[in-house]
Length: 199
Image (cartoon, rainbow, N blue to C red; front, side, top):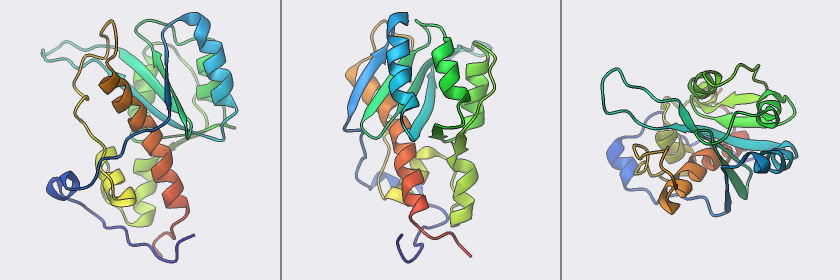
């Protein structure tokens, strides 16, 4: 554990933009066929901690909304991208989302879970929301980009956020963006755990 907490409360967009980018360096596996769901979930169920995020196709029309398209679950070195516009929110995925043994870390977890529950009802377990944790370390920012900037000193790119997550094929840039968003949650969490909270 480091001996002191040097985290700032806030960081500006300008300061964040000057930081080096952080990217997931591990293996990215797309899950877009039902037969691949079980193996992916078996691997993830064996992990002590998993990064969690979702993506939804953006709507540029008032009154038009889309259902969640992508569920990202990442270990330290492998990220699975479940394409929920192509596969169901199947029982093995629900078991993982309900498991209290597998720690799942995200930012704005409640919003992501709400989106997933529009597809199928389930009782979540084992989730940690960085937005709820951050104030214990004196951090006032809520966005994943700002949390990464303050805790890791690195910038998460948001360039692909408004891209089409229901496209027939996800581009390599989309895949990397999605994997990084889930994985970086585990990195922020681990750093917080090794830093003293504010008194």
